[in-house]
Length: 91
Length: 262
Image (tube, rainbow over the protein chains, first blue to last red):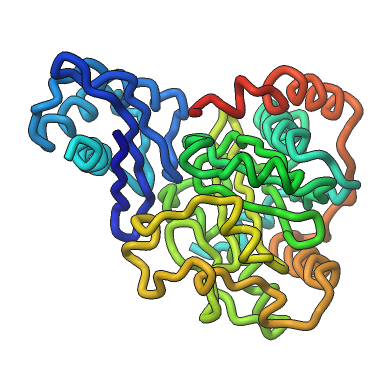
């Protein structure tokens, strides 16, 4: 399943994932965004892996936000943008 | 803040060497950033010369979402992944102008990450305009014109150093680009002009000047604006080259790195 969301004036986020037993599996988040440090990407995908597929968009965003330490800088996208791409993949 | 004065505190070096394969350029960027970060190399401006056509993916892009690999293979276009975020670029050796700036982070102290993109390329806009080319910065990271996008920048922040690199189109085979890169409608959803072909505005659409002359004007503009005594001509040191070759072998030239996000 594949979903995309572009933050207006910002960058494109893509979510590729499967759903098994009502949970997100094999989540991949990609796009032309900027993220420092780059290793933080695994924190984003890790926050979504195994999440219940029926969560609301804000709940997906909350999971992503909670998984990132304060020194992580997201440029051109946000936890909310990731959540929207995930919801579009699930739609 | 006066943008020029912070540049002029440094003695800038210039590397404008021979062509390198795409994966080697990726490795050189990492090594030269590391050397500047360790204080083993002065702040440096490097112009890239490409030895082969390539698609250069951003650090966080997925190969399958961005590239038609079968077409790329048929056309002999390599796919590599760089260390910085941002979008995929399609380059052919004589069609692109690519450069990197390696600097201590103090150059952009007090400037936001987003604001630093435009700051790093002010001299480029000045150089292009001095040649009669209409160009301006479109945040976050695009150099653009009324004819369409000229190029894009990306950055990485490492201990003691910032890397800012840019690829601009000199000429562009837009039809070929569209065969190789997958560009969906969502990407251009917030742009007034939604045709990708019309969004590309290579420098050649605005000027008859040879690519080399544009590069020379860029170098002279940088020297005049951003340095006190001119650019110091330099080259890649043997140990930098050796480290980059090793990094090309172990990372940037490997399938594992390119398919980090399949």
